[in-house]
Length: 99
Image (cartoon, rainbow, N blue to C red):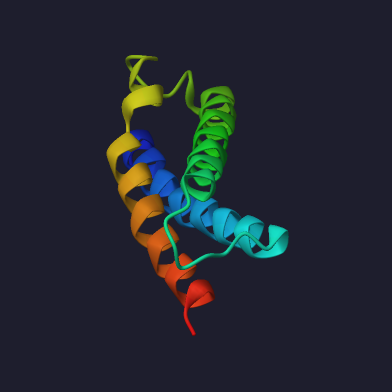
């Protein structure tokens, strides 16, 4: 598999991991609510951004010499990361907040 394809699929997996971290954080702090609470959303977005930034530096250290443009390391898989995070975060949060 090419390096950019590996990064793409790695970002999808990290999006799922970030969603699990967000759900566990919300469950551990006891903030689960069935009413609208923007603090939960902001905390989860912050965790997702932090995981993405950490993944960028980890990927950069390994794949910098293997790609033709270093700027592709930041942008490859960004859409699938956040879409995967959002889908799985909603799924896990719904399971935890359900009756």
